[in-house]
Length: 341
Image (tube, rainbow, N blue to C red; front, side):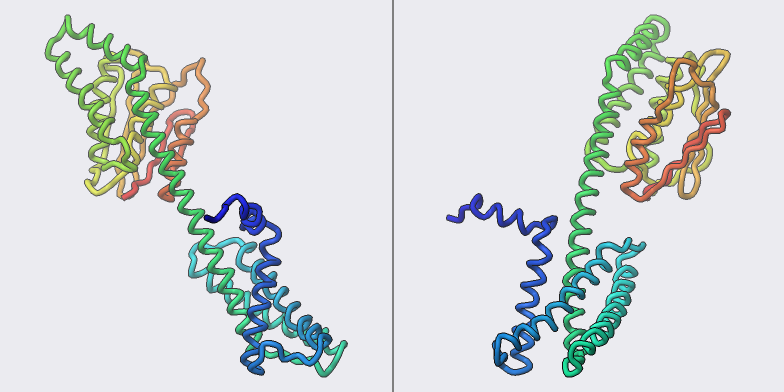
């Protein structure tokens, strides 16, 4: 049985963030490289005639390997990545081999002052050495980057699920239920048919909310149906002083994040006055690759907007590399939502 606790300090010492990791890699690589080179060149693991000769060759090989490793590490990890992986790889290769040539020329220049007999470079060996180190670092970079992307996607999915949970919780919020039950109570005594329609709309709203649990995106047509049912309740709540106008033809193949339209409608209601003198009409315009939700601005005096809901919604769309645009000229508030497809 292997005692994991016994080896834990060594594992931590050689972790990716450890300062010991890179020296250990360079030393291990040098030993393997030198043994391999000795076998090819002389068919012996130890072809040196004396310790002094070994130290000379050690200095001549180990120092260039260290420099090559450092230069390639800087090229691969320190330079900002470009738009695509293939483009980054191409640029890294060009920089790597250009740096190799510069290092070799500098090495020749320095060694020529020490011993002219040693002032030579095995270009085939240095090319092989550079390729091996570069590929190792490049693979490490892409593996780490891939793991990072997986973690970011996982975190983003958790945020989407949390957003859906928050939306569900807001629908079953006691304040929401209190308002809807009050509306229903007042309707029962006045208009039986409206009461039935109200109950039907409310049931459809809750069914939609329950259906969207665990989903990362929803068909635009389904979101529209949900908002239409939600609007029926708002019309009754605000005594016909609230309405939604839709322009354009939404496609059946377009998708958005669940509850996007509802959040934007709620945002308009939360931050603006609604009365007989100041009715509220939210306009939704459907375009080819996006939709816009706009409303006139009549801000409530006592309410300060933090736009937390909009910022959170933007983070969710960032997962799909989509950008929400917000426009506010103190007359009209407009939010542009890109489709996810």
